Length: 208
Image 1 (tube, rainbow, N blue to C red):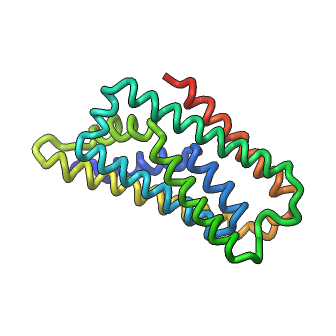
Image 2: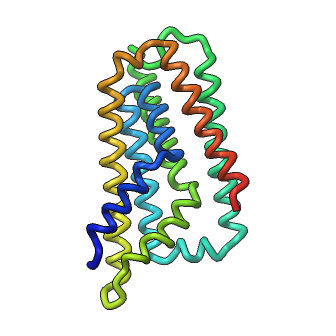
């Protein structure tokens, strides 16, 4: 496959740009610890895997041609981001002794399950991912080779790189966790991440 290294370099530049997934990973890592962040990444990667399969099978192209279906998914994704944003902002202003660490095992399990679900839904309901896969990946497709396996390979590469970047980011946050455990700082970050999610949700809602 030609220009694979160029694809990896370009993909990394795109991946490190902050987006809804970045904000969500930050929020859940701070709120639920390292496990919460990892579960969010697993959910995000799972959603991206579905986008990869859809692009490979041509289903994304069908989705792009259906204005009604595409609009429904866009609005659903925007509403979900706004919902997460409101919860995050509300949590930042609520009175809690410690919103990072909890001794209740059931709460921990529930939190990590929610983190996975949030990551998955955010990824799968993001129509911009569909647009990206159909506009970015074809630029690296070679005409004299199987388009099916090239789409699948490039999509998997992008998904794996995304997972690696987020895991690296989670480790970085975890290293700073002692500093970030301060309630005032945590509340501030939670509020900022909620505001960022809200901005992404509103932007997606009105984006054509």
